[in-house]
Image (cartoon, rainbow, N blue to C red; front, side, top):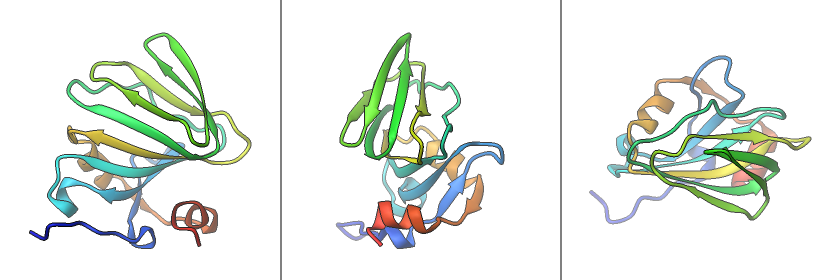
Length: 140
């Protein structure tokens, strides 16, 4: 195993977990591809998109907003999110993230430990990133 894992964002595969989901993931690092116990993705939410309500029994989940606007709901609290904001969700919290802006919402999302999230993503449907996605996540 090499001492460093390196990726160009243009090479990261993208997946949608379920066909009707309004968010999809550019997979950066995960156990299958990089032998790590975390998953790091750029999560991309369509306008009006959101995650389903979810929680993780052991994992911390961090969202860093790269572009767009959103709102997070966690155990009854609501937080407005904008570019440059970061949020850490602790294990056991029930949460959702909604895109409230006119355009897409992009977050760097990291979950530690992975808790099978990467496998869920990889078992989804492959999708192609569009020109806007490449502009935001790869600077192209």
